[in-house]
Image (cartoon, rainbow, N blue to C red; front, top):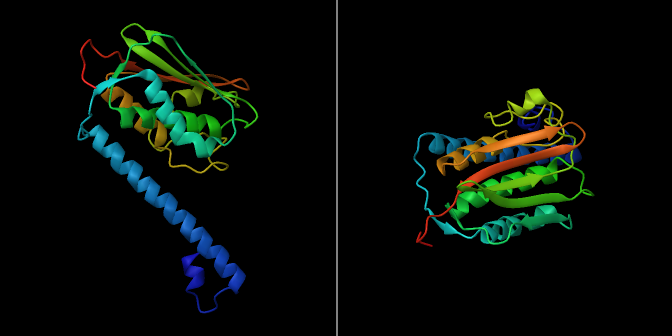
Length: 206
C-alpha cells in the first residue's frame, strides 16, 4: 500500500484513502504483535513478578466481565460461580488478563445469539474456571496446537484477525501462578477452555 502511494502514478483520492486505511490497520496489528511478543518473552524469561494476593473469585470474574463489556455488547453471559468459593492466590490484573482472553475468544469464535457460560468451582487445592461457547468447535489435531505461539485456527485465520499470541500468553500466566490451562472441544458443539488458580492460604494478604 505504501509503495502504491509513493509510486510515480499514485491512485486516485478514494483509492488513496483505502490504502491509508489498510496501512493504519496493519500498523495497529503489528504494534499489537510486538507488544504480545514482548510480553511472552518476559513471561518465558521469568521477568514478570506477580503481585500475589488473596483475590475473591467473584471480584476476578466481575473485573473480567467489566473489561469485556464493550466487546460483548448485549450478548448473554451465564455466570455460574459456586457458593462459598475461597479466594484464589493470584495477581488480579494478570489473572483477569487470562479470563478476558478466554471470554473474548468465545465471543469472537461463536454466534452472537448463543450464550457464553462462565463457571467457577473447587478442584482440589485450586479453583477451576471455565469459559464455554457453542461455536464450531476445534478438531482434535488443533487442540494440541492451540496454545502454541503464533498458531491460529486453520478455518478462522482468514476470517478473524489476531496475532496467535493470546492463548500462549494466557498459558504462561496461568503456569506462572502454578496452575494449568486446557481445552476440550467437539466439532459443531463448541469449546470449553479451563484453567486453575491455587486457593489462597489462610491469612494470605489482600
